Length: 70
Image (cartoon, rainbow, N blue to C red; front, side, top):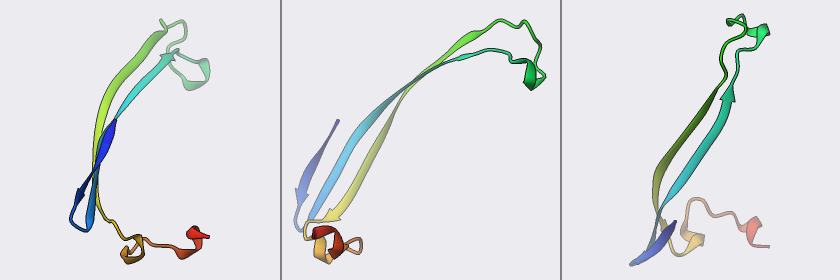
């Protein structure tokens, strides 16, 4: 989710990324953990915000690569 806002000769790009992680932990024998342990689920959700201000005229940008325009 995000957007772009014009500010003079700049663009402000901002938004939010949402992440979901799900896994299961089990005690494997080869890691010297207690064998026969109880497996359990691992899950986590989080959100990260981002923003950047860039020049509208990409040829004026320090990140400009004319080879990519071909």
